[in-house]
Image (cartoon, rainbow, N blue to C red; front, side):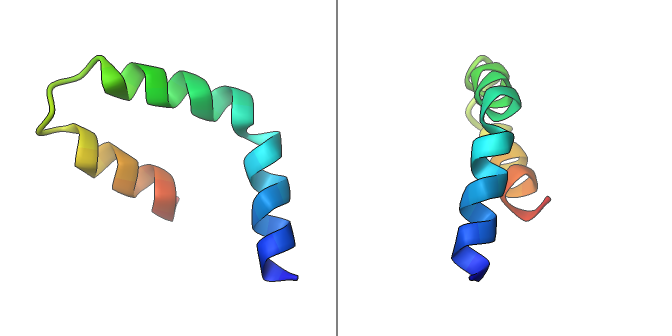
Length: 42
């Protein structure tokens, strides 16, 4: 059940998430892990 909810949220947020990842990929390597952690946790 939990996984289904997470998948649904991922689908809903897919568009904004793709934009977010695109922005992150333009940043220096040192900053990326912090932002990805923030994305995963929050």
